[in-house]
Length: 386
Image (cartoon, rainbow, N blue to C red):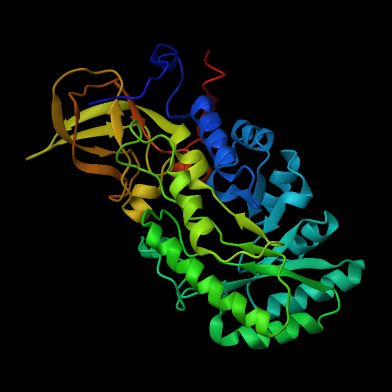
């Protein structure tokens, strides 16, 4: 089994479980994004919900990315990280009044609006502050992302966005509201998308919707296509950086962008997933009737994706070069769903071995909980452990 290059000598002295971020991988990823959007009208806003580790956000800010936020807390974290308000977009189907006010007070770039009631409340709050809220209408394009049903967001049956059948009604309203400025339109069809035809289908649908606005003589300055680009969970060592070239090429080729328009992206997982790992230790190897259990000191409190989405994460025993054996890799939580992998082959394992659960830079630390009154883990970076 090919393994990542970790400072395992430093890991031995650190209490597990903990999160480890390889900042060189992150920097290389950010550099590739910047290369692919150079000399274009593309702008990338990092999806904060993937990871808000301070060191990670600092690298993202240095690289010049904006922020895509889905809560007031994320807006504040973006501001605290030094990301300019002019680069912050704020989405979410249920924004509270205080969250909207936070965006208005800081003159953020854009609110992605998802319903008529939200537009009406936002206008009232903007009037009270003598502010104008810049908005993009989040339109539900009814495009399938061909991904897990929990993380698809662009179908008519999802809770997100404005359905195409309501588009005229919403457009009529937004043009009448005194303190709302329509900047553009926004889409997001799902997450962990590896089939580029899904993005191609989105482009074709956007072209149709743009024609609708053209027919009404409405100028859209910005198009926001969301994010959703997936990563290779199976082979993080071979594919540490997603195929950004193919991803951006789809939009250059198939989206009929007007010369004056800016195209916005909201990438999260693709930016940070591969730079992060959850590092754990083996507590026990338990012999079952017909299988072995490798019981770790990390559980779904530290990495919930396998329990929540039945997601796969590559698992590496950093301490062993023994021949591979089959294990159910599980955590200590008092729930049967606290299982990282079943019938998984990894190097022969014993108590005290150090285990890396790969591709945990997205939706790892940010989703950690204190269920069973467990302590939240610490996080370390490659710079910390030099």
